[in-house]
Length: 494
Image 1 (cartoon, rainbow, N blue to C red):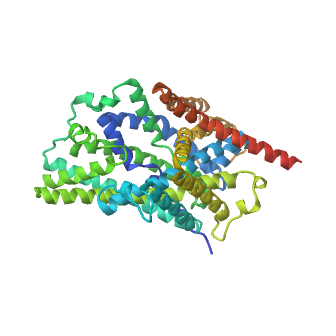
Image 2: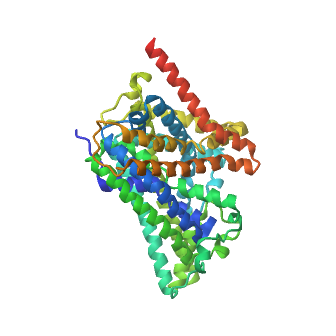
């Protein structure tokens, strides 16, 4: 049976589902108000756009490679650094799966009950944390079961996630414009000249250190495009589809972030809605969507009761959309990083079953092995008591910069990739050597400053334990990769 190929539209929706976070717009408005817009645009100009064009060149050139970023790195700077860089990257995604499998139930609860009730869940003597842990385990197993059935199911689910995020963004934008029109162009959060776009209304984000932490957050809100590299061999005309999909998505995501942040100011007065203690990073999206519905209801002249129902409905739809977005990104990321690592590296490093593909072209045994590892870790953290909870905190801290660390490898390797002779390059943007090296230098500075600040921020807050594990994360994962590589290389030589 012929395997279906990923089309341009499907790819754009997959990228949108994986990278664009509607919740990032609410967090940005909470932390910096209108002032966050300039930093999101700067993040796109200094990081997303140049790195995306580099990844587009990598993907188009290595269009038939099965290993995604592993193949990109191996073809540019050699197997050793490719193995170490990809292992650090892959390890951070394991941590991401653990946390997201639990977080996914917050929007689900909001969809069912109108607000987050996960902390009150319990069944058969299980407390709320244990209940969420069991549901997280079931989530991992169910997603893996569907994902091993082929790239077509992954593409469909992630595309549905992208559609729901687009719908949520569309409904939010239309409701905001209607409110603006009915209120005679009045903004709930006043825009008092240029100052509103450079200074945060949040007293916690007035210091240079807090501002720097937000800039890092804005830059890394765009992370994830490289994960699409593992599916280029499943695309229709990848040398054209991959670059087009990345470029269109880059423009759309940058525009969506910037406009969405501004639109929140139409319905939300920062001091009235966000200034209290009841709003946190876990519920802010649903608080703002609920407020949007209530304000729309009042603007339309509806009764207070009807406006409240409309607000709850908006919050529920946000819960549904966020749940579908989590599902869409999970289907991609439960497969793509693993495929890049296992299928890109030397097959002799692994037992034959790890690299064997099933009838649908999926490394099913490797995916189930990954699922078992994540399930065991979730079970240990959930039922292991306080020591296990501390272990989870350590794992999370170790993954803080491990996710973004391999970008240094990918960007630094690009000039070496450009210098390779005898390579077919069906898509090429960076044609001048001096310009390529300059842009690579700028992006590397942005990355190193961002990663460096993430590492030293806990030290500035005198949280030395978090600082230690944050810094040790990529070093530890890198040493594990180096030791495994040395052992396997020695074994193969012997």
